[in-house]
View 1 (tube, rainbow, N blue to C red):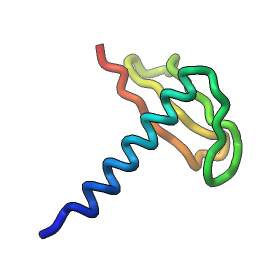
View 2 (cartoon, helix red, strand yellow):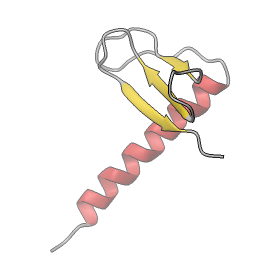
View 3 (cartoon, one colour):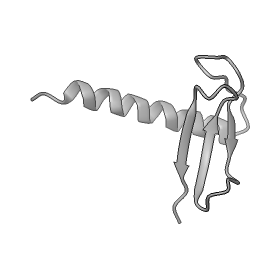
View 4 (spheres, rainbow, N blue to C red):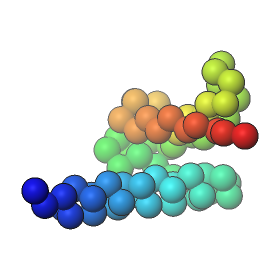
Amino acid sequence: MDFSNLNKKTSDSFHKQRNILKQLAQGKTLKCEKCNTVLTLDLATSEVGKGVVKCKQGCTDIILDLGA
């Protein structure tokens, strides 16, 4: 089986999400690609060691594992 296409998609997705996190951490305003609402970065969630990037509509929902 050839997994190169799947590996490329996974890598592209990871780098895209990493860039979103970097920009939000720098205080930049980003919008969701699907609904065009502002993305928010929340590091003070109810779960210890977890953070989230999301839009109001729920199209974008990235769960962050904030390890020590």
